[in-house]
Length: 339
Image (cartoon, rainbow, N blue to C red; front, side, top):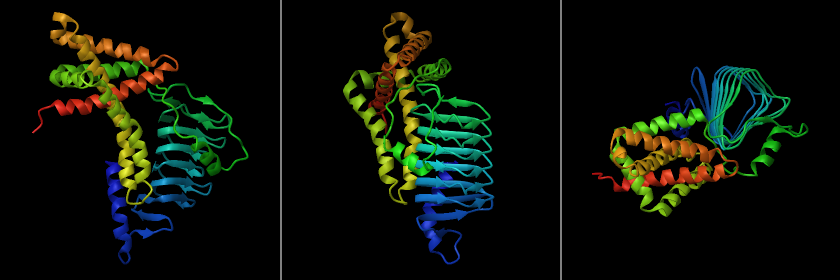
């Protein structure tokens, strides 16, 4: 809901700024608009370097909070690259390809994206929860009062890593971001596997015909399923970056950023359902009932969990499983009798 409202507000900013005495006014590289408790900024590049006693919401391609930034409230950012210093008295939520945090945060940090870095001057009085394609780079000088929690897809534990002290934050961040996206190397924890298994079993019990369509969508044309899934995995981030180059396209880019991880989760869950449906057809009379469906899903979940736990090869298994699942969704929908 918050994302929808923010996108709606940002779409109306150009109109509001054209009105005499309107609440929004055009900045040099974007627009700014505020309410009693929230400040909204958007543009191709947004640099924030002042004090505010309201929550800060930013949607842009590039976001930089300088050492002079002082936010008395929460911070919510959706961008391609983020570099944060200064002080924030509240929780911070970031959705971006790369984020570098090197300031004081009196709250919890939540990150969704590719790569998170905590610099030597990072002082976080709360937890750090990140959902990323690679482990977080945490400088030994960073201080975190709470726990550092990585998501179920991360490949390795967060480890302290030294960061050069003589580089300015934006330059370090720009040099590192040119390396691009990390290769997928994901794993699923035992708890995560149980959750996915339960969800897949519920789907198999409540929608056996849908499970069969997902299975047939992949088994009848596996190559097409892989290509469709790969188009999502690779194409959505590229498309998000392309449409984010203009202010008009930033809300659409943000929606794509949110849809990408949802597609990944849906693809993984779909692969479990489809594989379980394939297995229960091989169980004979046992597979014809509800027990057979549960057994099939349980076996598929266990096999996937073991496969993703393998070093190096786990990333390839993850890519195959997710792409196959996303493709099976598309092909399965084509088989459905839709009006």
